[in-house]
Image (cartoon, rainbow, N blue to C red; front, top):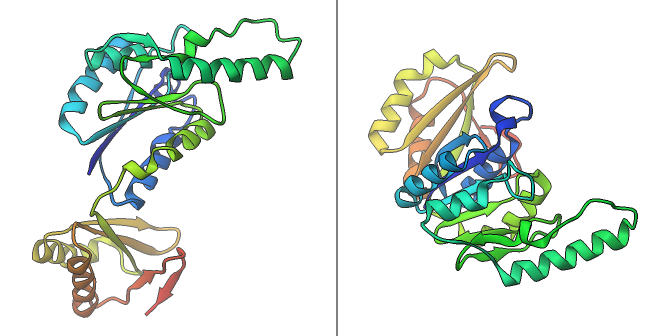
Length: 251
């Protein structure tokens, strides 16, 4: 399953905040066997977001969009997704009822709140979209065709994603190994293992730790395990394999 991630926000492009949502989503998707094919940051510009959705929805199995939901002028994601999918922007009745309930609770808990919260600001989404409840906030997400729209606030994004996480999966498998050798000394053998077994190989030096992390990625766990065994048998360096709990076991 090829997935693209679109993060929306001028604040991301300005470097005002870190793009932690993209990193979190990429890890979650990879853990489920999905292949994250693209990650992009786009401004709060309806035309740019719509164009990205139009192109990527046709190219990838799924597109996840985060950020730009709500009732402020720069919250353009929902109308942009609707435009990118050639759909109308409508108030979803299920989302509207859920948002109204949340607003009522907010006013009850904050009786001195002076500004108005209008449910249609948060319940508008592409026609025929399926709302995704947001247990941590006001703006729900939605699924329209193969496009998943999530809030930008990290705790809300994670909570909304949890409702649809089971829809993402695939056959991508990975193995991570570590070597005390510098990256340059490993280049030849890593190229050999990639070509011999038809897998993707990445190497990432950590000078502070004095080691190189090696990540092998493939579509067949058996082939990947054979590649790891071959690499260990033919390498003149001592490698360690990460355990399932994330610790390293020297072998």
